[in-house]
Image (cartoon, rainbow, N blue to C red; front, side, top):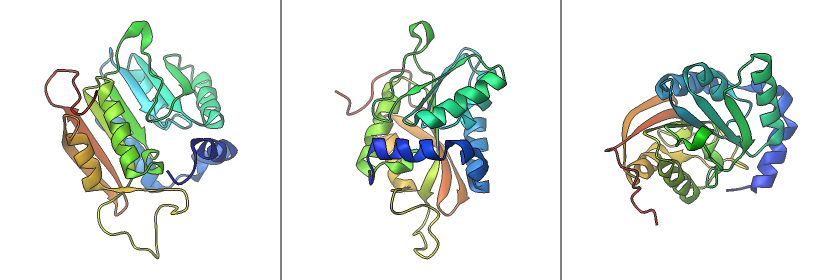
Length: 214
């Protein structure tokens, strides 16, 4: 990670009020795909990691039992809470959580069924992304849907989609390998842009064991 968690939290809190209006077409296309692929059942608990102001959380809330929205920026989460209140959405919880320590507790002790994340994991270095994906797998979720900045081919240094000073995107191959190494099959890869995509991973089998976990 090129910046500390605290730096990222402060940076996003400062831009929280205008965050929704600043996002690109690619961001919105990714968010739509993440929502479509997440496809929770009415009894499902969804963990939305790096939830920000709730683009995924609030879109999935009508179709799921409960959404655990986790982020490091209190300012972003406050925007999410405000939007949930205005929409009278009550089955969501915005609380502090990092990718590698997401602070997940489902209602009545129920485990997580689906994990989502959109435009957040790219702040981590590749080894940190692998650890985060192992943590996602360890929730017991049957499906993980990741929308993010990712490299389908060598990025044009003259036109980076990301901010090199704060972001650290991975190649699609690195992310696919990270999912398969923890017992998931990648069932879909959607290319939104040369540097933006969505990966959908499904658990192989029905057990909770995660390869490589202690």
